[in-house]
Each structure stands twice: as structure tokens, then as C-alpha cells.
Length: 292
Image (cartoon, rainbow, N blue to C red; front, top):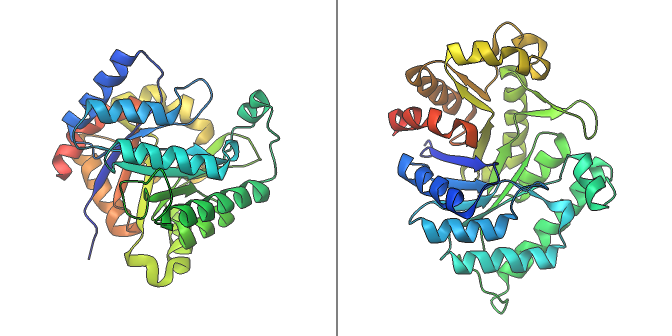
């Protein structure tokens, strides 16, 4: 049985309170299910932004998409997440990642550890959150009985293994960096299929319980893509250099074509939760309407 489709938009542009409220209301009006808040230096802190978004909207869920977990003490993060869930009446999803932007670690004066160490810190964080939220005496008490659902995002073996074992939502980044801290290279259909198969094998009996998410990098018409092709060329795999439609994280074409592509991705990979970036929010709206 297929999961119902869900759609999120990840906000990445820092602006005034007025514009933030306006954007969140617009996302809800367009039919998005989730508003995500990115966690990067230079952007608003995620939890205050989520609280304001909750006050301005009625039904959308709010998530951190995704926290740079290496920057957070697990016990203090649990307090922030539980408090946000309490104050939003249980609308929080907690998205977690290992962190990948070396320049942000340098700016914060935090060592950019090896991938293995960053994943181990993320694992410790997940374990701590689960233990605290399961304690009926824990305060502040999250509104959701087991605490906010945990979304773990990544692409490499270690991170996806952790996600398959512990997360409520496994989020596929859609590509990985060729070198630690380097730029992300987008994956083609075959590599995406291999990553999804790897996760499904690890999920085992949990396969029917865990939601799969994909971060869509761009939603564009063919004419718009022609203007963007050169900028995206360094991020494309060789197999998609002349056929970018082979990249699942790029939705290129008319709204009908994009809607068909989303249906194909759900059928092929079992992905039911799609997140677009803020710059594609309006472009994705007619696609979302067709998929409803």
C-alpha cells in the first residue's frame, strides 16, 4: 500500500519578520504540508523561525531541514525541540544531519571532524532524544507523545544506515560530496535506485513504517532550464550531462510533466514525501495541485 504524498518547502532566504510570515502563509495557501527551516550560519535560527511560522499558520507542520547536529549538545537540543513541539501543539518534525559545510565549522570555531565522527555524534544525539522523549517525567513535555518525529538526512552508507535504524523519516539528499566538505554532486536514477535499495534492505520489517523523503533541487520549465544549464553543469553526473531529466532531484518541464515525474519517482523508489527549495515554491504549486 502506497503512502499518501506529502510536500514540503525548505525556506533558505533570510528576510524580515513580515516577509517570513508572508512566505509561510503563502506556502500553506499553496497546499504545502510542511515548512522547513534550513540551519546555516547567516540564516535565522531554526526554532524561533518555526515558532513564528506556527503562529502565522493553521495546519502546516514545521521542520528543521536539517539541523547541523554537530553544532548542538544533545540534551540542550532535546529541550529546544520539545519546547517548540509544546508551543506549536505538536506540529514539529525534527530533521537532523551530520553537517557538511566546512566553512561554517571554521566560522563557528568548531573542528570539522571526519565523517565517521560526525555520524557518531548524530547517533548519540538520536539516542539521547529518544531516551528523553520516552521518559514520562521529562520536561518540557512535547505535545506529541513520543516527541517530534525524527527525520535523518544523508547519502553515504554510514548516515543512511543510522537513518534506516533510527529515523521515522529517511531523507535522501540526492547526491554527495566527492571530497569532504566539497560541493555536492547530484545523483542520476541508477545511483538513486542503489541508495534506496540499500536503505530498504536495512529497514527490513520497518519498511512499511518509515517514510522516504527526497530533496528536489529545482523545479523549472524547459525554457528556464536552458538558462540554468551551464550553472548546474558541474553538479551533474556524466550520465546526465546531456539528459538532466535523469536526475531525480531536478523536475524539468511543464507542470503535467513534473507531476508525472513525481508519480514515477514514488512508483519506482517508494518516495512519498518531496521537499522543494524556496526558490521553486511557486513553480511547484501547479504540480502540487495536479498531484492532489
